[in-house]
Image (tube, rainbow, N blue to C red; front, side, top):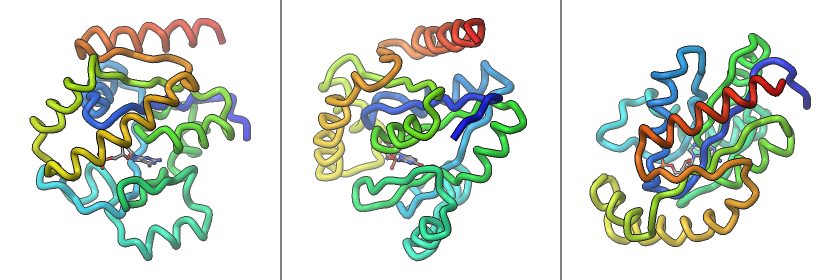
Length: 190
Ligand code: 5GP
Protein backbone atom coordinates (compact mmCIF):
# COMPACT_ATOMS: atom_id res chain seq x y z
CA UNK A 1 0.00 0.00 0.00
CA UNK A 2 1.37 3.45 -0.74
CA UNK A 3 0.34 6.78 0.71
CA UNK A 4 2.27 9.75 -0.53
CA UNK A 5 0.35 12.32 1.44
CA UNK A 6 -0.12 12.20 5.23
CA UNK A 7 2.12 10.06 7.39
CA UNK A 8 1.28 7.48 10.01
CA UNK A 9 2.96 8.23 13.31
CA UNK A 10 2.88 5.28 15.67
CA UNK A 11 3.55 5.30 19.40
CA UNK A 12 4.01 2.05 21.30
CA UNK A 13 5.65 1.05 24.53
CA UNK A 14 5.02 -0.59 27.88
CA UNK A 15 1.87 -0.04 29.90
CA UNK A 16 2.63 2.82 32.25
CA UNK A 17 5.33 4.40 30.07
CA UNK A 18 3.17 7.47 29.62
CA UNK A 19 2.08 7.02 25.98
CA UNK A 20 -1.35 8.54 26.65
CA UNK A 21 0.11 11.71 28.16
CA UNK A 22 2.59 12.05 25.31
CA UNK A 23 -0.20 11.61 22.72
CA UNK A 24 -2.30 14.27 24.43
CA UNK A 25 0.65 16.71 24.42
CA UNK A 26 1.45 15.99 20.76
CA UNK A 27 -2.16 16.73 19.82
CA UNK A 28 -2.03 20.02 21.75
CA UNK A 29 1.24 21.11 20.19
CA UNK A 30 0.61 19.89 16.62
CA UNK A 31 -2.84 21.21 15.73
CA UNK A 32 -2.87 19.48 12.33
CA UNK A 33 -2.25 16.05 13.82
CA UNK A 34 -5.24 13.69 13.91
CA UNK A 35 -5.56 10.79 16.34
CA UNK A 36 -7.03 7.46 15.34
CA UNK A 37 -9.49 6.04 17.84
CA UNK A 38 -9.22 2.28 18.25
CA UNK A 39 -12.01 -0.22 18.67
CA UNK A 40 -11.72 -2.51 21.68
CA UNK A 41 -13.66 -5.21 23.45
CA UNK A 42 -12.17 -4.11 26.79
CA UNK A 43 -14.63 -2.66 29.30
CA UNK A 44 -14.42 1.11 29.74
CA UNK A 45 -12.48 2.27 32.81
CA UNK A 46 -14.30 4.64 35.17
CA UNK A 47 -12.52 7.68 33.68
CA UNK A 48 -13.20 6.67 30.08
CA UNK A 49 -16.41 7.96 28.61
CA UNK A 50 -18.11 5.58 26.27
CA UNK A 51 -16.88 6.22 22.72
CA UNK A 52 -14.33 8.87 23.78
CA UNK A 53 -11.00 7.08 24.33
CA UNK A 54 -12.03 4.01 22.34
CA UNK A 55 -14.98 2.67 20.40
CA UNK A 56 -16.08 0.13 23.00
CA UNK A 57 -17.65 -2.77 21.12
CA UNK A 58 -18.75 -6.33 21.82
CA UNK A 59 -16.58 -9.26 20.77
CA UNK A 60 -19.19 -10.13 18.14
CA UNK A 61 -19.04 -6.66 16.60
CA UNK A 62 -15.24 -6.69 16.70
CA UNK A 63 -15.03 -10.04 14.91
CA UNK A 64 -17.46 -8.75 12.30
CA UNK A 65 -15.16 -5.77 11.72
CA UNK A 66 -12.28 -8.21 11.24
CA UNK A 67 -14.31 -10.37 8.84
CA UNK A 68 -15.32 -7.29 6.82
CA UNK A 69 -11.69 -6.10 6.59
CA UNK A 70 -12.61 -2.89 8.38
CA UNK A 71 -9.43 -2.83 10.46
CA UNK A 72 -5.99 -1.65 9.41
CA UNK A 73 -4.50 -3.95 12.06
CA UNK A 74 -5.66 -5.65 15.21
CA UNK A 75 -4.31 -7.67 18.09
CA UNK A 76 -5.45 -9.56 21.13
CA UNK A 77 -4.05 -8.06 24.29
CA UNK A 78 -4.90 -9.11 27.87
CA UNK A 79 -7.86 -11.24 26.66
CA UNK A 80 -9.32 -8.32 24.78
CA UNK A 81 -9.18 -7.28 21.16
CA UNK A 82 -7.90 -3.91 20.01
CA UNK A 83 -7.88 -2.67 16.42
CA UNK A 84 -7.51 0.41 14.23
CA UNK A 85 -10.54 1.29 12.08
CA UNK A 86 -9.21 1.46 8.54
CA UNK A 87 -11.49 3.87 6.67
CA UNK A 88 -10.94 6.86 8.96
CA UNK A 89 -7.16 6.52 8.82
CA UNK A 90 -7.02 6.09 5.04
CA UNK A 91 -9.37 9.05 4.48
CA UNK A 92 -7.22 11.29 6.71
CA UNK A 93 -4.01 10.24 4.94
CA UNK A 94 -5.66 10.99 1.60
CA UNK A 95 -6.52 14.48 2.86
CA UNK A 96 -2.82 14.92 3.63
CA UNK A 97 -3.20 14.68 7.40
CA UNK A 98 -0.66 12.99 9.64
CA UNK A 99 -2.41 10.37 11.79
CA UNK A 100 -1.28 9.31 15.26
CA UNK A 101 -1.81 5.69 16.35
CA UNK A 102 -1.21 4.57 19.93
CA UNK A 103 -1.08 0.82 19.53
CA UNK A 104 0.86 -2.21 20.76
CA UNK A 105 4.04 -3.60 19.23
CA UNK A 106 2.42 -6.36 17.16
CA UNK A 107 -0.07 -3.88 15.70
CA UNK A 108 2.67 -1.34 14.99
CA UNK A 109 4.78 -3.88 13.12
CA UNK A 110 1.76 -4.98 11.06
CA UNK A 111 1.19 -1.34 10.04
CA UNK A 112 4.88 -0.80 9.23
CA UNK A 113 4.74 -3.75 6.83
CA UNK A 114 1.86 -2.25 4.90
CA UNK A 115 2.98 1.37 5.24
CA UNK A 116 6.80 1.27 5.27
CA UNK A 117 6.98 5.05 5.41
CA UNK A 118 5.18 5.20 8.77
CA UNK A 119 7.26 6.53 11.65
CA UNK A 120 7.49 4.28 14.71
CA UNK A 121 8.31 5.60 18.17
CA UNK A 122 8.89 3.31 21.13
CA UNK A 123 8.23 5.11 24.42
CA UNK A 124 10.26 3.87 27.37
CA UNK A 125 10.03 4.55 31.08
CA UNK A 126 13.32 5.07 32.97
CA UNK A 127 13.10 1.72 34.81
CA UNK A 128 10.92 -1.29 35.51
CA UNK A 129 10.37 0.00 39.05
CA UNK A 130 9.21 3.28 37.60
CA UNK A 131 6.74 1.49 35.29
CA UNK A 132 5.37 -0.56 38.16
CA UNK A 133 4.91 2.54 40.33
CA UNK A 134 3.15 4.40 37.50
CA UNK A 135 0.72 1.50 37.01
CA UNK A 136 -0.03 1.34 40.76
CA UNK A 137 -0.51 5.13 40.87
CA UNK A 138 -2.82 5.04 37.83
CA UNK A 139 -5.11 2.79 39.88
CA UNK A 140 -6.91 1.26 36.89
CA UNK A 141 -5.72 -2.35 37.40
CA UNK A 142 -5.51 -4.67 40.39
CA UNK A 143 -2.19 -6.27 41.41
CA UNK A 144 -2.82 -9.42 39.35
CA UNK A 145 -3.52 -7.41 36.19
CA UNK A 146 -0.52 -5.18 36.88
CA UNK A 147 1.70 -8.28 37.02
CA UNK A 148 0.26 -9.49 33.68
CA UNK A 149 0.97 -6.08 32.15
CA UNK A 150 4.52 -6.09 33.57
CA UNK A 151 5.17 -9.50 31.94
CA UNK A 152 3.84 -8.22 28.62
CA UNK A 153 6.00 -5.10 28.99
CA UNK A 154 9.11 -7.30 28.99
CA UNK A 155 8.03 -8.95 25.72
CA UNK A 156 7.38 -5.56 24.13
CA UNK A 157 10.71 -4.16 25.32
CA UNK A 158 12.50 -7.01 23.57
CA UNK A 159 11.13 -5.69 20.25
CA UNK A 160 12.09 -2.05 20.63
CA UNK A 161 15.02 -2.41 18.20
CA UNK A 162 12.44 -2.79 15.41
CA UNK A 163 11.29 0.78 15.98
CA UNK A 164 12.60 3.83 14.13
CA UNK A 165 13.13 5.80 17.36
CA UNK A 166 13.21 5.03 21.10
CA UNK A 167 12.15 7.90 23.29
CA UNK A 168 12.89 7.90 27.02
CA UNK A 169 9.96 9.37 28.92
CA UNK A 170 11.96 10.67 31.88
CA UNK A 171 10.27 14.03 31.42
CA UNK A 172 7.12 14.51 29.34
CA UNK A 173 8.00 17.95 28.01
CA UNK A 174 11.48 16.80 26.93
CA UNK A 175 10.16 13.59 25.35
CA UNK A 176 7.46 15.47 23.40
CA UNK A 177 9.98 18.05 22.16
CA UNK A 178 12.26 15.22 21.00
CA UNK A 179 9.42 13.62 19.01
CA UNK A 180 8.40 16.93 17.44
CA UNK A 181 11.98 17.67 16.47
CA UNK A 182 12.28 14.25 14.77
CA UNK A 183 8.98 14.80 12.92
CA UNK A 184 10.19 18.21 11.72
CA UNK A 185 13.47 16.71 10.50
CA UNK A 186 11.59 13.96 8.65
CA UNK A 187 9.37 16.54 6.98
CA UNK A 188 12.40 18.50 5.78
CA UNK A 189 13.92 15.32 4.34
CA UNK A 190 10.86 14.66 2.16
P1 5GP B 1 -5.24 -0.21 27.40
O1 5GP B 1 -6.12 -1.35 27.79
O2 5GP B 1 -4.24 0.13 28.49
O3 5GP B 1 -6.02 1.00 26.94
O4 5GP B 1 -4.38 -0.67 26.14
C1 5GP B 1 -3.65 -1.86 26.19
C2 5GP B 1 -2.71 -1.90 25.00
O5 5GP B 1 -3.45 -1.98 23.79
C3 5GP B 1 -1.78 -0.70 24.90
O6 5GP B 1 -0.46 -1.16 24.66
C4 5GP B 1 -2.30 0.04 23.69
O7 5GP B 1 -1.26 0.72 23.01
C5 5GP B 1 -2.81 -1.12 22.86
N1 5GP B 1 -3.79 -0.70 21.85
C6 5GP B 1 -4.73 0.26 21.94
N2 5GP B 1 -5.40 0.38 20.79
C7 5GP B 1 -4.87 -0.53 19.93
C8 5GP B 1 -5.14 -0.88 18.57
O8 5GP B 1 -6.00 -0.34 17.88
N3 5GP B 1 -4.39 -1.88 18.04
C9 5GP B 1 -3.42 -2.52 18.75
N4 5GP B 1 -2.73 -3.45 18.11
N5 5GP B 1 -3.13 -2.22 20.02
C10 5GP B 1 -3.85 -1.23 20.61
